[in-house]
Length: 59
Image 1 (tube, rainbow, N blue to C red):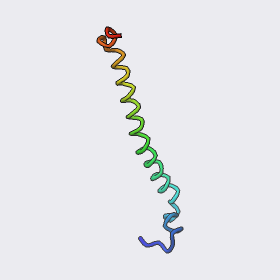
Image 2: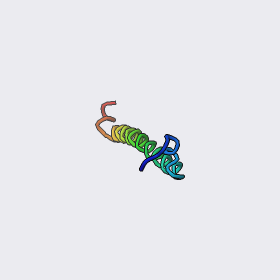
Image 3: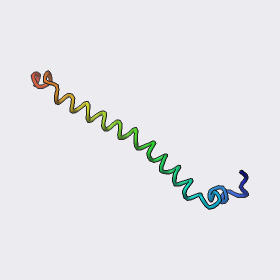
Image 4: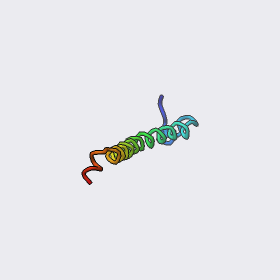
């Protein structure tokens, strides 16, 4: 497709809000998910260390 100007490109024929909103939501989720996975992984390692009976004997 050809657009006559940058504003026409960003308007996307009247669907710009949906198109760019979808890109923004996807970008947000793609940056948020690795951070949440890292948090869950750290928490599960911490919980596993607490449940390990060998750790309690050393304390």
